[in-house]
Amino acid sequence: MACPSLAREENESGNTPMHLGVLWNKLDVIRVLLQYDPTLGYLINSHTNAPLLVSAAFRGNIDVAKEILKYCPDAPYCRQDGWTMLHEAIYQGHEAFVEFILGTPDQRHNLINRKDINGETALHIAVAKCNPKVVRSLIAYKAILDLTVVSKRGDAPEGSLMSDAKKSAKTLDRNDVLKIMEILDYEGSTSDTMKRAKTLDWTEVLMMMKNANPDALTLLPRQEAKREITEKSNEEIKTLTNTYTNSTSIVAVLIATITFTAAFTLPGGYSNDSGSEGLPVLARKAAFKAFIISDTSAMCSSLAVAFICVIYRWEDRKFLLHYRSLTEKLMWFAYMATTVAFATGLYTVLKPHIRVLAILICLLPIVPFLTYVLGKWPIWKLQYRLGSAYKSDLLDLLDMV
Image (cartoon, rainbow, N blue to C red; front, side):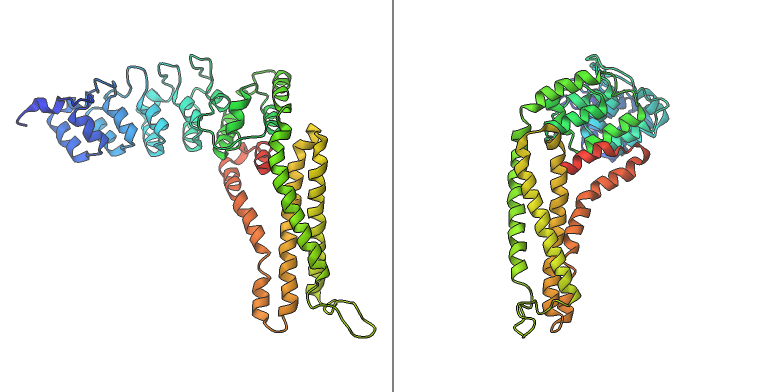
């Protein structure tokens, strides 16, 4: 090398050629530099104090990290503040890099319980990021993983499930929060918790942590938590429920109107023959009977929903806690029954003339069912992944979205 010092020269950001090669995943360049001078693997960015392995974790460049460890088995893996390449890989969401670290015995033992300057381990970061795959990977090494480690702020890993709301995706009704707190026996920040508790990732991480360390979420008095959440929730229950109620009642009335009208405009019309005046022409057809039953069922269930949306104004908190679940079930039944009524009504009329089209129309009732399956599919996958760690009482809350 004509000018060896160039390999250690830093740019204005404190990066050496080695750092740039790591960040840009230039494996061939890294290999050439390390073959010339293996000590280049120990370089640290003078501005960020980031070793090469932390930079590799930042980009998730596994091959580069392997090459550095090949020439420098004891290369530095953490900054001065204790932030390791495992912290960085988890924070950046590079799951493959995390698996690489955990799959290397020496790195796994050195890093899995290592704390940063705030006293937080890799598990703290994984739980705070709500990354189920990474949490599952860490818990797989439960024999050496410290599940009870506490940060300098006094937070256990699972504590961030209650206090960190920056990654929230949905909001949770406060009456649902009360139910969650009763399940967890946990007193935390209501406003923070409710922003995250409706995500599947949040729920999956919670279940895994509760299964790995059953006592972790039952450290605080249940009654005190219940009292605090109840006080905070009562003021906003009506406001948070109004939007759902208004939209649901409108849809219910529309379905009731449609089905009521269909009952008096029967497919095939009415008979004018003597002795059967006013009777439906197709009254003896099985499809017609199915039409009558499904149309009546749809109208009754939608009217029941509309009635429930009126009496919810009683403002009884226990009633409000369950009425959404009931109205959703009734509305799904109304959707299904309306679709069946539509399909059987057309089938009755079209069968004598266009049999194939009539049969195809009868497939329409499958659509609401498929929609239901697609909505449930993520939860079923979660149940499969968690196995015995799955807790249906928490997932029941997701059905109320």
